[in-house]
Amino acid sequence: MNCVFVQIRCRPGTAYRVADEITLREIHSELYSTSGEFDLLLKMYVPADADIGKYINDNLLDIDGIERTLTTLTFRAF
Image (cartoon, rainbow, N blue to C red; front, side, top):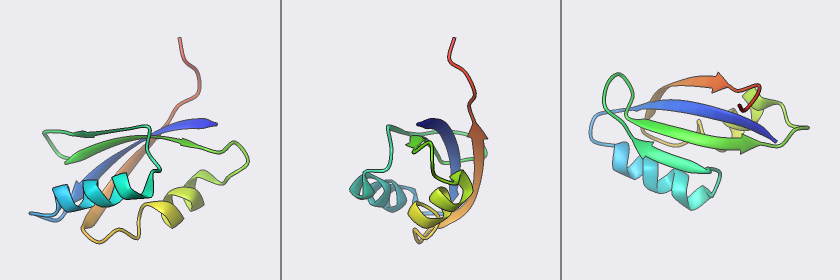
């Protein structure tokens, strides 16, 4: 599994609805509300044999209310 962090910017007034939809899909390990440029921080594990971009596109980016994302790939835990 590949650990990936996705920062999510939502359209105004949609962050809670977006978070609820992510929760229902059960694709996350952890999900936080954040301050700053992005509204949500999602930690997820992508199967090792999956294309990370396609997996995120197919499982996350079709949620209404998501305006922009920033994905950070991880390589090693210390």
